[in-house]
Picture 1 (spheres, helix red, strand yellow):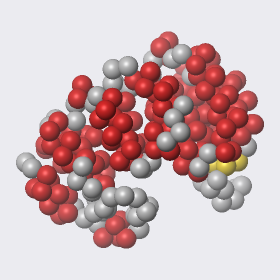
Picture 2 (tube, rainbow, N blue to C red):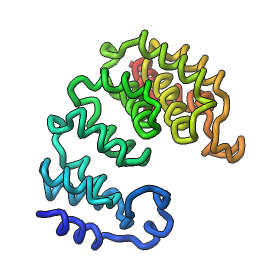
Picture 3 (cartoon, one colour):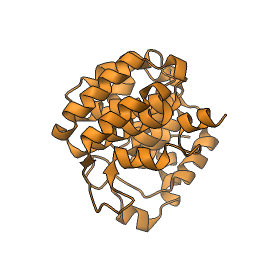
Length: 235
C-alpha cells in the first residue's frame, strides 16, 4: 500500500462533522475528519511498515501522521526522526495519542526527555512534558528517578505561569500523573499543585474542565481505576 492509497482509504472514513469541528484547524496540516477507532483499524491492516510511516508522516494530513505513529517500529524511532516528528506534530494529539505510546520503549528515552525539558522550542518542550506524564503513569515505579522528578516538579511550580497555554496544560497534567501514580512523589505533587492553583482554560470552578491539579488529585487519589498509588494501597 502506498501513501496515496492510504489517504484515499482514510477519506472513505471521513466524518464531515468531525472535520468541521476540528480543534486542529490552526495547525500546519490538513484534517480529513476520521475517528481514532478507524485509524487504528487501518493500522492493524497495514501492520508495521517503517518506510510507509515516514512518508505518511510527511504527507501533511493529521490522520496520516497519527497512523504513521501506529505502524512504525520503536527501533526505527531514532533521535532525528523523533525530533522531526515532534516538531511537525505542532503540539497536537499526535504527541499525546501517538508518540507517547511509543516513547518509553525508545532507547535512551530518559536522556531525550531530560534534554527536551530544557528546550526553548515550544513543540519539543510540549512533547517533553507530555512524555513526562507517560513516564510517571507507565514506567516501572522502581525505575523512576525520584530526584530528577522532584527537581522537574519544582521547575514546573516556578515556571508554569510564564509558559504558553499548551505547555501549561502539559505541565499541569504531569503534576497530576506524578501524584496519582508514583508513591514517593505524592507529597511533592500535592505541594506543587497547591502552588500552581488554577491555569487556563478556566471555565468555572464547578465545571469538570477546570484546570487544577489539586482538584484532580483530590478527586482521583483514592480511585484504583485512575491511580496506581491507590491500587498499590488497595492490595
